[in-house]
Image 1 (cartoon, helix red, strand yellow):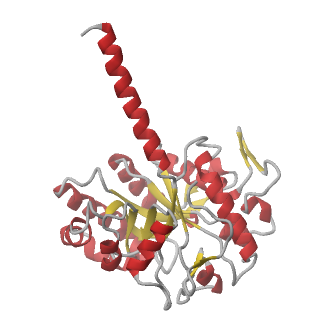
Image 2 (image 1 turned 90 degrees about the horizontal axis):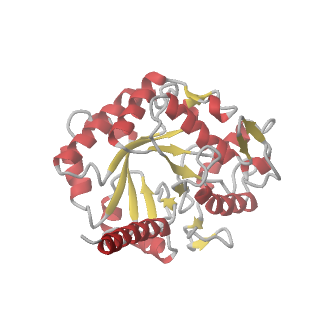
Image 3 (image 1 turned 180 degrees about the vertical axis):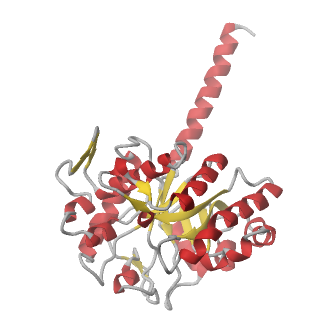
Length: 344
């Protein structure tokens, strides 16, 4: 082959690769969680159309809702599919039936990207500690089922954890997992399977839990300058600090190659301290504008992030604020926060 031909081949391959990267980045990093704990929510098919109308290209659901999985077919929307904590026990040894019914029956027409096995399981929380021994075996079982159909590289298996599993988070570089016996095997599984750790990141709860030391501008991305200096890293917002704390703990647990995907983040518009439409709008707008910039620990690395949630959920248990995390009002399908664009 002549040198000219070699150069042409190189350029073709190079520009094809760059084009692929650009196309991938143009998909954006923002998704929206589709929680359905409400008595006034639109039908699943209408919700999928609403995602499309608003240019939202990624969705998280919390159980294998068949109507949603069907409605997503050929929509182009990428999906994070959840396994509820109460279903973990049934998946311990053989998840083939579950994968057949909820994945193979819909994929690839429904673009399942992740399977989130369990949500916010904490071995030190009395409400979730019974699920802690079940998370990793269920993840492994689903992964094995995916390999039977050669889907393990197309669909990544993970679990959705949260900041409560961390300790010593100030500054972020000191963070470790409170229970290494729980999280370290999970992190090593993720490293082996080249899967991300899903993490629910909520500066709102960090702020209301320690308002004496955390200022509201730091939580809302509006601080004037660096608030927390951590060696060579300067933190201007709590979101970055919380994400990097998760990275620090993951690295110490043997997951230096494991990426963090923010599987939930949001701010309530009512029902609690600092829960106002104004604050929530500031948070969501700034979060959407920020995630492509990365964090001090991972500068320039876009953070795939799922906003919580599409609609207010009027049957959500817990504090009143839990019912007011929606971006849209389900009664009139109107966006609460103007302006707000999902195409970052």
